[in-house]
Length: 512
Image (cartoon, rainbow, N blue to C red):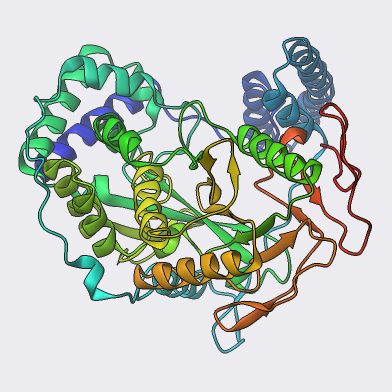
């Protein structure tokens, strides 16, 4: 398998280098190939500035470059503005905002130093790379501790073997790859596979079927490169950076095929209350459900209590052993479980900084970043936590004859209750169950809310910390969409609203 993957990567990269060549990097997007050629010519003429003729030629080319740069920049700006207008007419908000960002944003200057754990500033590139490797290794090797009892699950009875991977499966997976994404450690971008024709498809078909039959993943397909991106605060501190991972694009073909085989089983397991990473569901839909529920309870003058649960590093703290036990618990196909388990057991990462790669280290906790497969196993894992926590829990919040105890979008959970005691019981159950599965509720970011004008009469605590009632909370919002930026505002202490007509909006809530 390792030899097969090495041969595949070498053939693809060598062929691309020979036919396409390397893309010449440019610092400014408006610089054309003709201008780059003139820059090369000017560089050669600079060496010949020993006589008057050499100086004259150098100045002429230099002047031509300056005029060309000005004209090229104006043409580029005009093209961007024209694209902006076209996107506005087509209501393509994503591309529109990206164009505005490209035209107006200024790149944040990256610090050249970083502090070690003792606060000493590191300036040498190798020292900085080692510091990042140690920091990320500790971050992704968090020791998940839970209740060993949750691992006592009998083997899955669904041992039916799926048919071998077909050529149509590979072609569909290759076609679904997103363009313009950075390559992983193997340096094979998605565009090469999408334009490689029958040769690429046949090679990937052989590799994927071999992996499916043996359950063994090739090393390059389990590796990921970690890129650090600055956030806010002191940029000499590692914790003020977020990390993203670049994984192998050829591996995404196999991952997509596994996802297509796992999703039908997952959809039978995941409850309707979960809207995260599911087709046909969105944050807008979930906010709408919550808003209608809140308005109806206000209209009928009934109490409604919320607890907005936040888990500490939810995706990065998934206990691998508990995840596999959960899939066995829900009787996921045994071969799929074996494939996912082997992938996580072999997963490694390294920090990529200034064209240098640090030491490789194991990933022992959390779902893989950048992996198309990760959201679905996470939803299955969270589903068992919620199922065990809500076992024998009788909720009083309902619409018609349907009882609703929570609304979820991935790990963003809004627990619902009609009484304070019911909400406290819900929080206690979630805290106890999540701890058993190696997850931890973030007490600081977990918030309480109610439409009761008197607020909470009893203390509700999370991990021993008392939680206060707030009157405003932003739930599952995204900056890219105003529709998802919703503030639910309740005003404790103000008079309870009177009955409203079905088409009127209660005064105790803000608009969207």
